[in-house]
Length: 109
Image 1 (cartoon, rainbow, N blue to C red):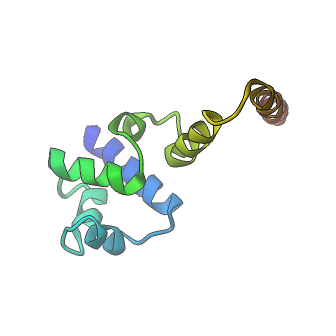
Image 2 (image 1 turned 90 degrees about the vertical axis):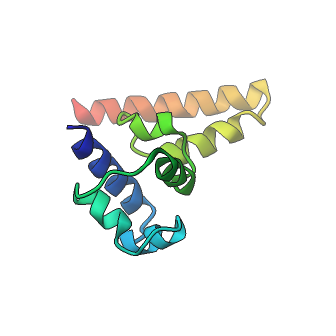
């Protein structure tokens, strides 16, 4: 069960970055088939490798396991920008986000 979640989550995050399993493997300092073997549930990363994977995606381990957030790196980028805004700017962003959220809910119904 955990292996399935881990493999699926990693594949999803990797595809959002439009990077091959081979390229990601080499970037995090592993052999070229490492990520492919994880995604095919043939192996499981060590804790150290997991931290490298999170660093690669620019997310925290908590973000990795939060399946309700399909795009954690982008959300984190937005949050970091929000910290720089004043009250008036935050209110504008809040209203825009609220409006977009309501529009999405109406399409789902």
